[in-house]
Image (cartoon, rainbow, N blue to C red; front, side, top):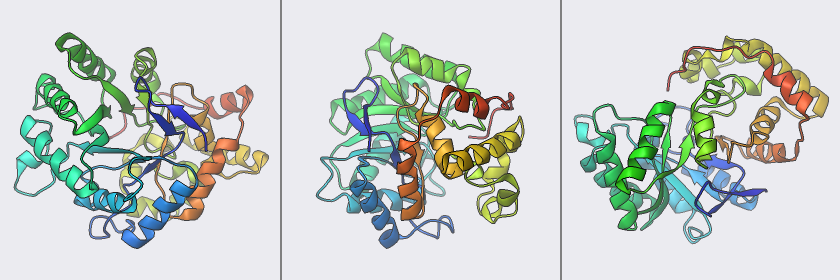
Length: 323
């Protein structure tokens, strides 16, 4: 395993972060792993040197947090744990979602309880809340830092101007700053390179790309993916522009380079991200120990400048993807 400094914090994290969306209950999504199997993957991740884990309160409506907390019992101090808030947690209770003070305070307490922690390392806003002034959200998050309920705060999936406004508001008001950003970023979706990622680079923000394999599209050939059960099980795949703007050609080139390197497609797609200076730690989601081990092996793949140019050349601008 390789390690790096997490943005401006001084905290050391593994170059791969284990995403925990696939851990929880099949009542939430049919492909989600129940606790016994999920725990095996978390333990394998620890054995492989991964010390960074990302979950959210909405993943299996809290079950993911509970499973992660149980798996890390006795090892929480050596782990870096991140969770998120925004999506509505309970039907009929609009204040169980959003980024108001009421929501953040009650949902952070609930997350800490499920995780079995007094303090979470990184507390992130899962989306931008159009109904709550960013000043209220940032003031509440700053209070959470001061009260010792979270060490750092981060953000996910927003426009560059929104993130810039957040950072400036914190600077002007003296609030704790966002130290990280989770952007939607992979070989088939690079629109974040226009504004958000340059801003993160300039401000020394840790970057944790989600969907590094384009919801599995970069893990198998185009035709094989199209005919698989993945689009049916994960309808969001078809809502994202992975297959347009040169996406199919990129898929073919990933396949070709994987054959040349003696690797699989997922490893090449991950290696591309790991070669990006702005990327701190991609978030990898997995439902098998085998795929987890393969992801870690991607750290050993060295891509030349010509390899990177070969993979990137077919890309064309696309419409912003659904968040």
